[in-house]
Amino acid sequence: MKIGYPCINQSIGKKSISTLRLRSYSEAKVKECIEYNLNCLHEILCYNVDHGLYFFRISSDIIPFASHPIFQFQWKDIFSKQLNQLGHLIKENDIRITMHPDQFVLINSPNPSIIDNSIKELDYQSGFLDELGLGSTAKIQIHVGGVYQNKEESIKRFIKTYTTSLSNKIKSRLVIENDDFRFDLRDCLRINKEIGIPVIFDTLHNECLGQNQVGDAIKLAAQTWNREDGILMVDYSHQEPNSRKGKHSNTLNHDLFEKFISNTKGLDFDIMLEIKDKEKSATQARLLLDRIKTKHN
DNA sequence: GGGCGTCAAGCGTAT
DNA sequence: ATACGCTTGACGCCC
Image (cartoon, chains in turn red, green, yellow):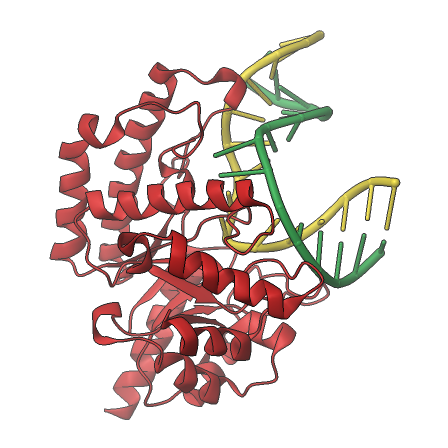
């Protein structure tokens, strides 16, 4: 069971990811950005290893504008050495990696150009993981997409795009996550039955939309992961008190986390803590988990 | 050097 | 209507 957090580290004393505006785009600037970002990723991963955190989500912006038409920069060639080194670091330490394309990536849209742009983005992200030399346990997580007033048709469009338009490289990494308002675990499991795509389970989204007991839900989701996918990934968060429904909490609630661990006892999965204070909560969760384990052994 | 309006992209909910 | 939230604030113009 690995513990991790997404994208940003607030402790290493420098901005975790750097990007630029489209208006100020130039090859020189984007090159500088990428160099900075890859160095930063290296520092973050070293920090994580030092703190026993072996699960990390890499920001979609690691290569800014990578799927935009303006972007012609040959980043794979120029940075092959750094990418190789990063890959070695990840593999030597057995770090699990995921990426999460942003909300604009919708492969079930009725608008073909949105699907087109989404596939370009997926192509870039799976290409990035390929350049690191990572196998198919490194995943790219997306949601099913929009409902567009007709959920059944929207599920069908997801399946159609998946089966007819995605490369095997993308498919070997793509997983779907239950969301907070549209497609719940049950919908994702149905899609899995049709096309075999693994289902990543999000605890907060399940609280928003599903009524599944967390232990049952995790057992069901775990069955969608095959040997080549690695073990189930879980996005863990809880509701920030006195905020809108679905808002990720700012800090880890130790009682809730311990309750979650006891409710899922005996199950193995990797936990991504989607909590605003990032590596702080992840480190706390790591310590709590170690304490619980030694108590039981 | 600090303040602050704005940033490639979509969708759905809350106010 | 508008703002917010989403995997994440922070870029960069203006003074």
